[in-house]
Image (tube, rainbow, N blue to C red; front, top):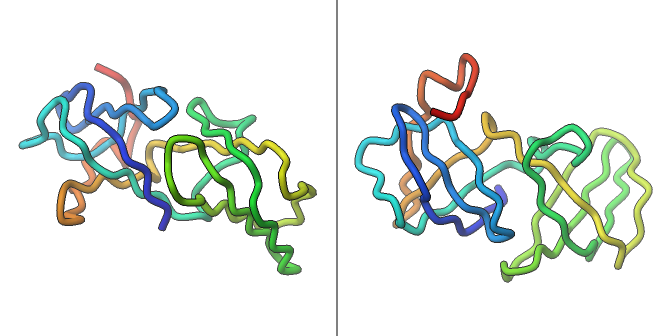
Length: 135
């Protein structure tokens, strides 16, 4: 799982808005009870759930550190500014990109998980099954 440091910027019924390291904001369909605006949390997303940036509303961009062509899939390790670790993007296809290139990935809100201190995952809300809409 990839982890990003985030800060809570707003809450609504069954939704939490967080600010990503690149200052973009994203609404997540998670239980908001007990979540405080201003709290530092972690956003988690699996490598296979990241999207190509051209089909996502919220994206992160960084420098490609490692490209692993595994035949049936490609794993790309991307250094995102403002965090001290690489994110791993996995796609079930060949991706032609070189180390050192700039590469952008998309974050689908319905695939993101939110964790509070101690790595306690916030429960997914009922919104995950339907449409996620900002309040």
